[in-house]
Image (tube, rainbow, N blue to C red; front, side, top):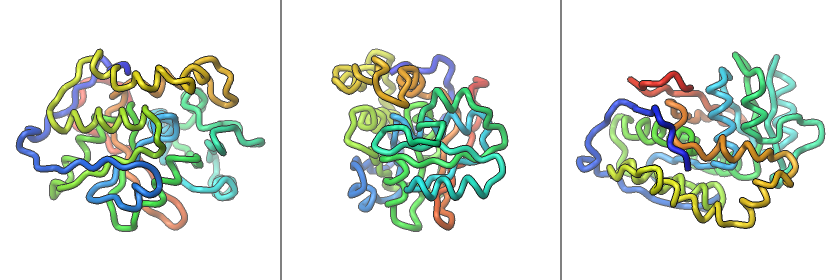
Length: 256
């Protein structure tokens, strides 16, 4: 995990003064049992895609659960783009396959990105109505924590939901909890959280470029912590969840 060198967000209450219970769950079942604020984590790659899209000027990201829904929705929005995959693989006729590399290269200024993924968008949709929801990944980890803790009233519970049982999602959740607890990690400690991913056959396969629709550059883009200074709250709309960027105060970099 690379730590962005210039991240510095406005301080919030001393972590030792907070009484926040952090709950760690996984997948659809975990989402259905979330308490307090629900933070849905998808590092590889759905909510990394969302972050790069919003940083690139997208007006909003719309999360849906089915490909046909994504296609129909995008057809009704002038200039909309689709980012979608099924079982981690590209979908014929859809140019962007849940790839931050492709999103970073696209012209998104003022446009809507419609997203369908096999993990992140499904899990976010499973959260009970009426709950506050944030979409998260490593690139917006610290900003997401700050946005949650600045909610009024201060939340008593935060549920970190790994959208899939993958080491990078669990690492992101542990990294965010460390921020809450005031346990600032140096780059080596942060990197150790991702070691189970880097030691896996899955990582070697992704790094080799052998996976269709998954350029190896997606890994570098996704595994840099705190690159952007905004959180991604989700608002429930008819048939989809809408992500927008909620910029955090007093950051010191022009990133995102």
